[in-house]
Each structure stands twice: as structure tokens, then as C-alpha cells.
Image (cartoon, rainbow, N blue to C red; front, side):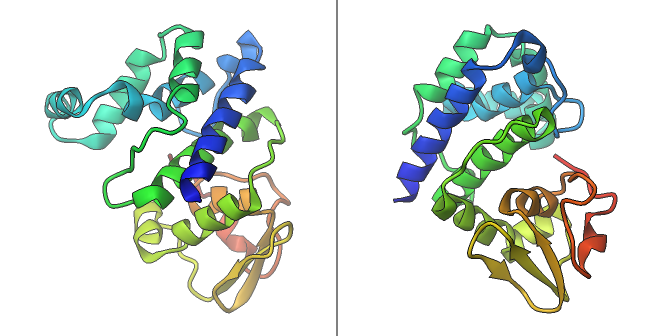
Length: 207
């Protein structure tokens, strides 16, 4: 089932990208220093780099995945728009999984980076409720919380547009997509998060 959500998400993001203007394609994303074009280059990196080439690029980056990721995004953002979109659509059913992340990690990778594009462009894109729940469950797990550095101890997260909640304590309430962005270290618009736990939304930013 989750592989179906992944494939549907990739196809839907590709369709959305097809409809963007040239200006939107070059607009800033939620990833600091990256435009839409950079995010798409990053999204498609697992499909365009076979394991041997990936390992070679990682060695060139001194073993730093962040340096590798930034370098490839900067370089491959120059690829033709149609080529990048096709790489996403044509690999909708690609079995890639991030190390240690499984299918849930792959789905989360696609959903969050899709939001990195649509959120600042104020594009509303429906995401399957089941897929969104899986993403929220993934990013509230201990491994993701440690990775993104967002402390939700003493907070009860509540989605207003989805039957989902997590934790206990001061309520932190918002749309599922806004909660997902907050929990992965992205900025959310003022007023998007409410409740006694809303102080978490102040000054949180990341990639």
C-alpha cells in the first residue's frame, strides 16, 4: 500500500511541476538557498545516480552527505526542466529507500520536499490522508526527532484536517501539512499553528 502512495505522490508532484511558470521554477523554496529547481534536482538524485556513481560523488564530498547533496543540487539544477520532471514521473515506482528509512522514509522524503516547493508558492495540493498520517508518524518517531532537533516533549500535536494526534501535554494544533513542516524544521506562517504549545513554531528553520 505504501508503495502506491509513493508512486501517486511522485506523479502528482510531477504534474504540479508541469504547471509552474518559469518564475515559479526559479522561486525560493523552504530549503534555505534552494529554488524549486534545486529541490527537484535533489528529489530526483536517487533515480539519476546509480550506487557506484553515488559512492564516487560521496567520496569527492569527503564523506559528507550534506556536502554531496548541496553540490549535486547546485550542479544538476541546471539540467533542463523537462528532464528533471521526467526523472520524477518516470521513476514513480522506483524502489529507492533512504538508508535506515524504509518505504516510510521514501514517502516522507517526497512529501516534505514537495511541500518545500508548494508552500512558499501558496499552491494547495491534496495529499492522501493515509500517506500524510504515515509521514506524521515517521517524523514524530525518535530517530526523526533527533535528526531535525525539534523538541515536542510535553506537547500534544493535533491535526485539524486529519484524524491524527501524537503526544501529551500542551496542545499544538494545525493542519497536517503545517505540522509536518514544523516537525522537520521548516518555517510555518504566523497563525498556522495554535494552542499552548505553539511556541515551538518560533524561529524553527532547516532543510
